[in-house]
Image (cartoon, rainbow, N blue to C red; front, top):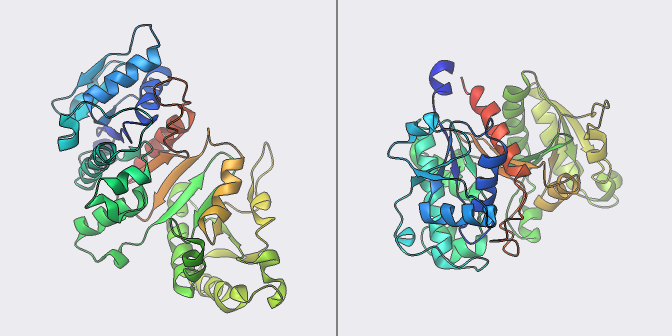
Length: 356
């Protein structure tokens, strides 16, 4: 199985064609040829050629090669950009204007993700790295994409459909990781009011189980999971809120009965620092479970978005992504930093090698 899996190429979806996704992809192929060997772009040839010209800034642009079969990516020489042309009605038009939200760009981005994810689900590629898309453009694209706030929810829906399961039987979680900190989120893209309501016994326990299973595969051992409380000081014994006592602690107890190494709810203003691995210092926890989106993402992004990687846990496929958005203000300038994308590709390689 390992030998077979190693012969599969890795797909990179181009992201929103009006943003920096295509440009950081070209930069990654230029600057990290070893890491990008065997990778290809699920996207639009004209969009990638425009990006290559922007990155070259008057110099010689990287060649863009249209594949007739994805396996050809394994034989492509370094510092060229192999592209699988995704058949999308929106791609039959000239590439959309840079730096602008549009339905055309949203449809192109969505169609590329769907094609690449389905290829991964069929076992035709080793995994999927997604360049950033724009949620407003995705919504403007209409059905089916308007129903999904972002990549995670779209991929969950595709995975559930592929397995013939209802959506609630294909739970996923978002993990943000860099060299110093890993954070998993109980809830993802929703309002703060809805996120608070999502802190339930079932959701917290399910998050702990998904985190344990995924990190055990990555680390080769049971992970040490730190749990962030919801309220200041983790509720201070009920003085500042009772969710820790009523919901989170019982979920922790249930997880411990299943053999998980999980902490009691910790004050959220210190638990991330305790988990941080810096230099020779090993963190107290391998990963922190955060109760909502910004609680977990702020500390990871504060440490530097250039090294952050988004990993979707619970999917029957490998999916990683850089930890930043479409940066419309940089689109077309060639100045966008590809470091996070390169880290996402490295992570996808590591995870796909562990699939067997």
